[in-house]
Length: 468
Image: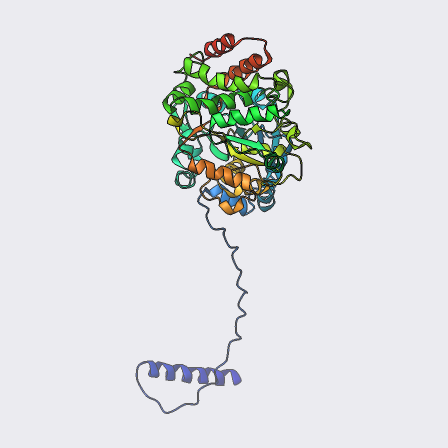
């Protein structure tokens, strides 16, 4: 009976709803109470992880900071040892901590001799630091280096490097020119360091011309002291410090065109221009009254130890021509502007203005993996060398670096010298083919200084070694 009653009620409600839908009216009926459905429980919103902002250097660097390559290893090789190695390692710690990438750097005093063997033998590190672009150029010709224009955003490279640095990083490969490397650190080389407090107390004055430099040299010797601290020993790279002196004098005694021809092999070592430059160097180097330990000590004195006697009390030598990086080898605790200072190596012929000789480290990539791309992209930023700049001994070639990073008057002053130079040229031996610039130029100049060969033999042997 109940079942029938509920069927009648359902029929009556359905009829009423149908009439209402058709616009018809019926006597008011009592509506069944609405039954509320229980509110559905909404699932809590899941926030998507924020994606890192895309970086202009490349996607891999963006991914690295997102932790995508944590636990990977990138190997590097180069010439940084001792104090330089410590400063480099410290400068990359922040990046390693932020990304989880382990950059394993192997520094060697025999780098120039060993790296070609490793590359030719198929044992290439992921990234190599070349202080000699000419040595890298040899590897590029063999097709061993990776074109960085395919790794780092070319627009970023154009934005963050001057045209001069970009040109020096472009080299000829088997299929045409490539972006062979990016510059990570620059050095100014036309500098003479001296012990400031003692120098001032002795009444010596900073020379403005080469004649004044030689007069200062003679005055120090006349006072019974040794004017110059000089050493060129550097393992397999012994002799490079001698070539720097010749290059600096070449810029002061002949035209930029001749300098460039010399670098390209179009002006021989056995030429009047090179012989003339060499005569200015040997006038100092081969005078035992002018050099600490005499001429014979120069080839066996490690270049990093050469300035040490300058800090003895009293100084045992007073003048040391070297790049700004040499401050890394000064005794600990010595303060720039107080314990030591520097002056610009004076010009010789006014016709050639105030040129500056410079150098730098160019990083090339030899193995293509995402984490390696991320690291080389990082090295294209000023931030990658900031720690080294703040520690002293480095100058950034990156446009996104800040002058506020330079903590001492020396490196800031070097940056200003480079800015005010009437001309700037890269270290010639670093630009020459590796067999010459990092080979016979070093070797035969060392032999010449030691007295085992004469000047004619040295210059002619270097010319004979030039790749034809």
